[in-house]
Image 1 (cartoon, one colour):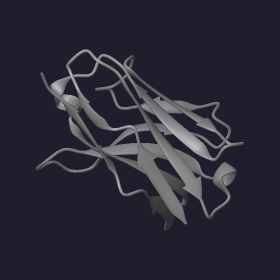
Image 2 (cartoon, one colour; image 1 turned 135 degrees about the vertical axis):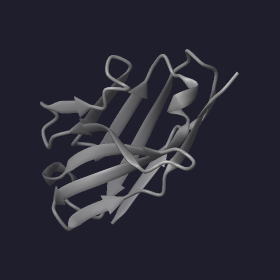
Image 3 (cartoon, rainbow, N blue to C red; image 1 turned 90 degrees about the vertical axis):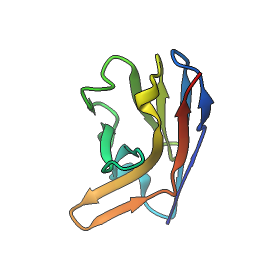
Length: 116
C-alpha cells in the first residue's frame, strides 16, 4: 500500500497550490479519501474529505470556499486545490485513505509553506 503526496512548496499569501496524492496497492475506489494537515505544535486536523464516488465533500470551516478536493478513480488519484492561501495554512499535508475504523492508510506528507 502506498500513498504518495506531491505538489507542496513555498507560496506567497494569496497564492495557490494543487496537491496530488497517488494511491496504489489497494482498491482505491472503495475508500473515502481525506486530506489532513499538521502545523508545528498543533494536532493533526481534517481539512477536506471526499466519498468513494466523489459526489460528497466536506471541508474544515477554516478552508471552506478556498480549498477543493477531488478524485479520479480511473487514475487512483486524489487532489486538493488550495486557493487564497494564508500563512495559517502552513503545515504538512497528509493524504489519507479510509475504509472503516481500523482500516486506514497514510501518506508521508508534503510541506506547504505560505510566506512572503
